[in-house]
Image (tube, rainbow, N blue to C red; front, side, top):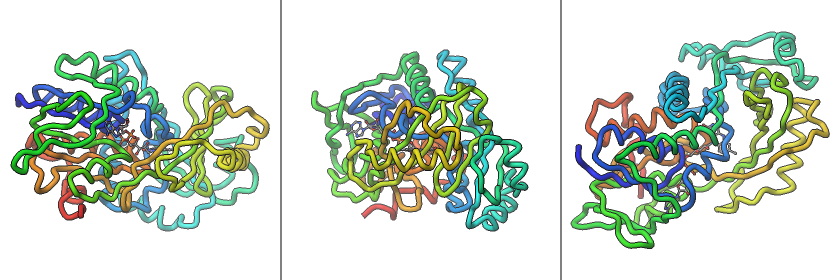
Amino acid sequence: MSKQVVVVGGGVIGLLTAFNLAAKVGQVVVCDQGEVGRESSWAGGGIVSPLYPWRYSPAVTALAHWSQDFYPQLGERLFASTGVDPEVHTTGLYWLDLDDEAEALAWAEREQRPLSAVDISAAYDAVPVLGPGFKRAIYMAGVANVRNPRLVKSLKAALLALPNVTLREHCQITGFVEQGGRVTGVQTADGVLAADEVVLSAGAWSGDLLRTLGLELPVEPVKGQMILFKCADDFLPSMVLAKGRYAIPRRDGHILVGSTLEHAGYDKTPTGEALESLKASAVELLPELEGAPVVAHWAGLRPGSPEGIPYIGPVPGHQGLWLNCGHYRNGLVLAPASCQLFTDLLTGAEPIIDPAPYAPAGRLS
Ligand SMILES: Cc1cc2nc3c(=O)[nH]c(=O)nc-3n(C[C@H](O)[C@H](O)[C@H](O)COP(=O)(O)OP(=O)(O)OC[C@H]3O[C@@H](n4cnc5c(N)ncnc54)[C@H](O)[C@@H]3O)c2cc1C
């Protein structure tokens, strides 16, 4: 295919979409209003699983499972080709004192996932720094986390090495160019950028851009705040989660604790209230963090969508315009499958999974 594809937004979704498309089409241009990979894809925790996978629809599960299997090879491939290691770190995950444990276990049996109830004493043996008082635990082996700031850095490096990819940072797209019902380009501050196909992967901002065509896409920013500690490399051997809050160990002993869920428009200011609340959760999970310095505190904007089901596919009535957005709390875990499915659809290949649940058709007003 000798097409030129313009990708609007260079988060993990836009970058991985561009990476996949580069092997299949003539030219790919990624435009980002800031630096690529500095918004939600940088701010997230990087758990390679939905937080409560059994609470999601089969549509999210299908993408998550495909991606989870693919992540280790994606990490290795990017590391080998760029020298930047996305650090896919397989630690397993303990959920503590869940209300819907029975649903979780039934889901695991149905989906054949390695999740099982464990004796609470076994959880304390495996994670000696776990706070006191937890009564029940379930554990899923094999769950990884990815060091997402490095993932986007390595994707950027991989794209910069490809001769048919151009990254245009600080290039805000303000609208689409249409001729006879077909999208033929995008509007930038420097004029029109022509395209055979345009991919909207602008994260939390995707709805605003689609509104310029009179379409309502229910994607809205959902603020999430996170804090970071630095401990010994082996301080926390596994991810742990209780009462909606989690601790994620990186390989070098950095521990992320998240996150809040706030509807605050596009405001990304970290707040003192969230800091105190996250610190309290951190200490409840891991009491040794009491008094430990918080080495960073930040906020990002998730691309919130109904039920967290992303929009992947063509926009009806606007030929040449495609969506890959609305991944809400799971954009890092869902990225490999979403971007492969997207590439299959755009290039007319056999899709890796049934694309119907993600089709924009019927989900826009
Ligand atoms: C605190 C927090 C914790 C999270 N934890 C996890 C987790 O553990 N696991 C997981 O899977 N997911 C997690 N997520 C969610 C995940 O980060 C997102 O779903 C994912 O990063 C979305 O990727 P994206 O590429 O769609 O959006 P983004 O990364 O936000 O990228 C969108 C890009 O579009 C650009 N853009 C916007 N408008 C325009 C325009 N008009 N012109 C040009 N460029 C534009 C932006 O500058 C941005 O770079 C978390 C998110 C947060 C905030």
